[in-house]
Length: 483
Ligand code: GDG
Image 1: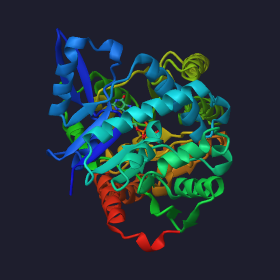
Image 2: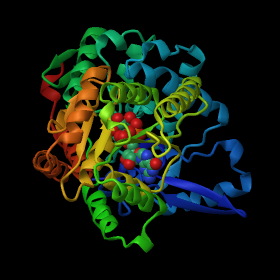
Image 3: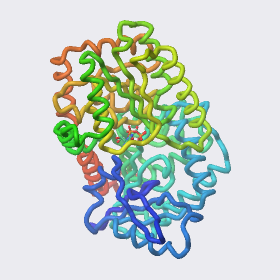
Image 4: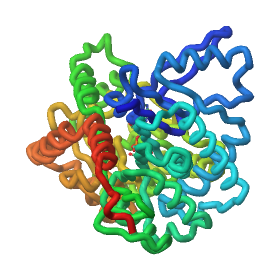
């Protein structure tokens, strides 16, 4: 068996240039962690964009960068700033991202961006072809690279290719509006295995394949020429141990070792034992429903005024894609809403919303998870939502309430959470009240079930299941099924 090649838009390392020297710092994100079991040792390679455009890399530093990346088992695809604009900010984030999250009205169908998307996907495919041997296994990640599987298949017909989509696959009625819908499907069908977070996304994809390409689909197998492509769901997990152990350490922290944030949170809790903290953490993205959550919070305070001065909503909104206009508009809307609600309800001793627009270090994330009584995560549409899983993993005494949107992929595996429709303010306000008053015993009952599930189906298991399924698919003899 050959090596494993992982391909994603971004590499799992961050490059830092200082005084002509390069440092490559491994990322701590979910994907990088999850792939550890696959991307370790000498027999794997990760191909992706470094985050620096060609214009940002001085010629004399290019070899140093390649060397630094090689030490992390990585190799970069070079992109110019206009390619990043058309491929990443353009087609990926202004066409596919909104469309696949059902924001049809935000989706732009620009021929120019589609052309750049194709060109950049070819760059990624070429980088794979340059590095790959016939017995290698290729794992392509996410919506930025949907044409890559077919581009590789054309040149290496027998190589093993898997693809995983981290965002929803929309229903046929939405997907059919894309002018390049057949091309996207054909691109994906270069794979041997196509994975989604949920069974619903899998069904939507199969339905589009059947209706747009007229291919034969039987159960979760697609018959195409002399190939059989398997489609399956692999709900992504988290590094449960990492979050759980970080929370245990956090609890042990003496005041002198605590972060400023943790000290402040504790001070407020000590001052009023009845007070409750609601927690909202997302990238600042219109799919995450942050503005709706703020309206629902206002509705809650009006409907249940007895909780004024008793509850506090902590919002961590992580800056994201801030040069895409929809994101700039959303930022303004959220800034205004927070200002308006705080202006309307604040008293001399109470500010209802604490709003952080930034990315926080991991330790502070754990401070928030462990200190907040209720996690309120209600995306309008979300492929999975790992924050919901991380919150539960940090609840070492098993208390805490998770209010989760039905529209998050994770809701499928987290039935013991309080599931709500983010558009239903009445239901959400009632859920908040129920969460505040939920007996600790009930919280523990719900969370112990969730924790067991998350610990078992962790991110390493997710990656291994996908790889096993891909190897299994490759090992099958399909010569008799050619149709
Ligand atoms: C996409 C899909 C799918 C957040 N703020 C900070 C921080 N985070 C970390 C969280 C979590 C991750 O970022 C966010 O993951 P999500 O799954 O919630 O959301 P997306 O970024 O939209 O991810 C999503 C995912 O891919 C995986 O397939 O679940 O549906 O949209 O791990 O912990 N980390 C730090 N500081 C922060 O301020 N350190």
